[in-house]
Length: 420
Image 1 (tube, rainbow, N blue to C red):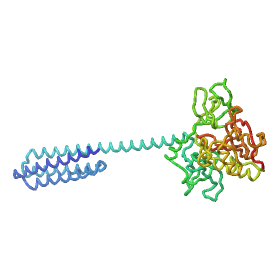
Image 2 (image 1 turned 180 degrees about the horizontal axis):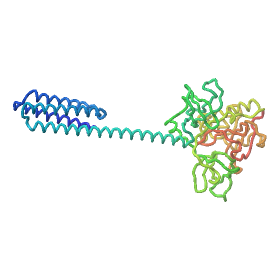
Image 3 (image 1 turned 135 degrees about the vertical axis):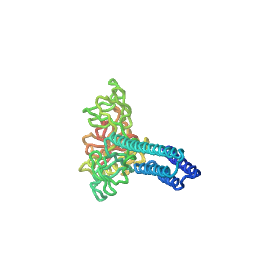
Image 4 (image 1 turned 135 degrees about the horizontal axis):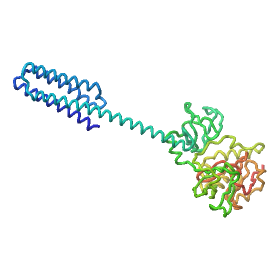
């Protein structure tokens, strides 16, 4: 584009020199000085305007500039006619004027073409921007949202019934959970995540490109069970042993999709399920309702307090061998640390913990009792029952501390370690 502007300016300057030289030659031949001045003045005026416009850029060369050039040409023609009326003008002067007119016409045409190219470039840029926006919308839609927001907080983000800290908490968003942004009210954002709808503080919510980038980092590929009871097997075939069973609707973390089978993570174990009985999807964590973490009725204050204490760490990381409720713990480390807060000492092993307290049936379970799971009869996972048919546990490095249905796996044993 700059090269085209330079060419236009060069053409105009060349025209100026040609006419000026012709005018000087004519004067030396004793032509009428006033006539030469008229010719030079008319051309110089036109060329000056064109040169100024060329320096300003293609956008300045418009229909008005072409009109100014035409006026300059008329001045040249009128000056030439005046000179012919007084004296015999040298043929070279007429030729020079004609040449300038041609050059100016070429310059105007070149400017018009350059302007068309500029318009085309702007149109291309607009199309590119539109394409990028469409791509962002498609990326967000991949996670089931049209205006994606992602929780960016240590622990859990409270979802309130109204835009204010005095409003009731109606749910909690674990860190990196996704939501649909419904609107903004001051420092609060209205969202919907899972079955929870309410308001969160905007400062703890990623939006736009930042939300999409985080979603790409933390997304989970899940296999949702679509049959009444699904067998999880040791190997991808029906001849091997059954590790555990999963109920309909349970979401399983996918490790690998094979031919006819899906390799999944079951807490700290790996297993295989038939691809015919699961639905694969890519999702983000969702908010939990208060009902989902609410304990049962008629239990002791200690049990109520223990459940409330344990569930506040949902969303925190899983770390193999860890015992920190904030920085990371494994399944037995999580249970050990929660119970230690209430003066109950437990070993750091799910197998060893299963031998503590009193064995009870699952139907007798109260909030605070322990559910144990395993591969066959071998215990390798533990969770805390929180009532309402649910447990809280440190599940895996991918999902961290979470809440699940108490029968998301078949429990091997249920133990009571709280006596009141």
